[in-house]
Image (cartoon, rainbow, N blue to C red; front, top):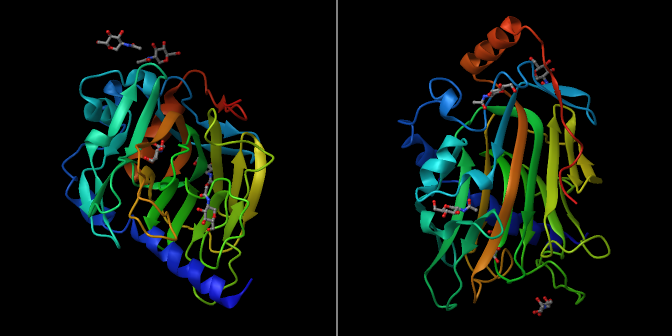
Amino acid sequence: MKPQLKIFLYLALLVVTAQADPLKHALKSRRTYQALYSRDADELVSVNVTNCVCGYYIPETKQTFTHHITLNPSALNSSDLTTALYKQGWIVSDRDQTSTPKNIKYTPSNLKYNSNTKALELTVSGGSSSRGSIPSAEISTIMDKILYGSFRFDVRVSSVAGACSGMFFYKDDNHEIDIEILTSHIHNTTTQPDGVPKPGVQLTVQPLTKTQVLSNYRVVPFDGRFDPTKGYHEYRFDWLKSGVKYIIDGSAYGTYTRFIPKTAGQVLINNWSNGNPYWPAGPPLQNSILSVRSVDIYFNTTDTKETANWNAACKKASSKKICNVPKSKSG
Ligand SMILES: *[C@@H]1O[C@H](CO)[C@@H](O)[C@H](O)[C@H]1NC(C)=O
Ligand SMILES: *[C@@H]1O[C@H](CO)[C@@H](O)[C@H](O)[C@H]1NC(C)=O
Ligand SMILES: *[C@@H]1O[C@H](CO)[C@@H](O)[C@H](O)[C@H]1NC(C)=O
Ligand SMILES: *[C@@H]1O[C@H](CO)[C@@H](O)[C@H](O)[C@H]1NC(C)=O
Ligand SMILES: *[C@@H]1O[C@H](CO)[C@@H](O)[C@H](O)[C@H]1NC(C)=O
């Protein structure tokens, strides 16, 4: 890889990581929400401790995780989508993010439940390229003490160019595990100039440094495998102490073993554009919609109260039920 390309990618990826930066501040102001699972537990459709009371076993990695967060869009047919999502363990972003060359406006109105497709849609609004701010959409888990697990997103991306659809673990820019699809770079057989991401699924484990070999950034081409804009596909990563393994529709897409985060954080799904010509290009001229059919996150937590509750519930249960997690949902 040419050094200029490395620097270009480094700079381009810095832009990407910057997208999540103000999150810390945004979340601090939300601390008035109750903790997930504890007091509110019986209201949460996604949590039923009687079911898999002693955890979730992932056969591929031979790991048992204590907790499970889902996103089940069929339970989101509600006039109050923000509350319906909150009950499943998700916060809807409502914030302006300064970005270059255009700002990003994460707005709840760019999030919709589509009752025909039974999917949650995250939209990047289409419109003129002279806009100063691009309406975009984002959700994040209320749970912000996720450490290791199996993370699965059953989604379809838009064929409208100019958006970045991201599904990722985030603590800060140095502790991040990304799956990103740039709708401008899905299929393109033209040779790309330096700095323009290659077409395919963009898989990154942060941090990235200027000097390190970019072994933790890869693009896996879709061509010949599947078209992410047609039908739903399951994008997954399994994060353990020893590494991060990417899996799509049940097939291995690569394993990273360097710079693996060892810090707890949260999971985000977003769809955005800032018009940066390298990443993600755009902004889109028409609405670009990311459709989410389901999310399943099996994880351990560093939240001592959650862990204590889990231990007590498992100990007390008459049948020590550990659920086997199926390999893949999608087809
Ligand atoms: C939780 O699971 C148990 C066992 O399958 C079931 O009897 C119970 O109704 C479930 N509770 C909720 C709130 O879904
Ligand atoms: C997750 O927690 C369970 C229960 O404490 C433990 O047995 C398991 O080893 C943990 N997994 C990882 C990857 O830390
Ligand atoms: C969604 O809710 C509306 C109004 O409550 C109802 O008429 C409609 O049948 C529901 N659709 C689905 C797919 O559940
Ligand atoms: C393909 O890539 C070339 C070079 O970057 C670009 O000029 C062209 O617009 C791209 N085509 C599509 C359909 O995105
Ligand atoms: C993201 O935005 C693009 C462009 O507006 C859209 O086509 C795509 O469906 C959106 N992706 C998601 C997951 O909502």
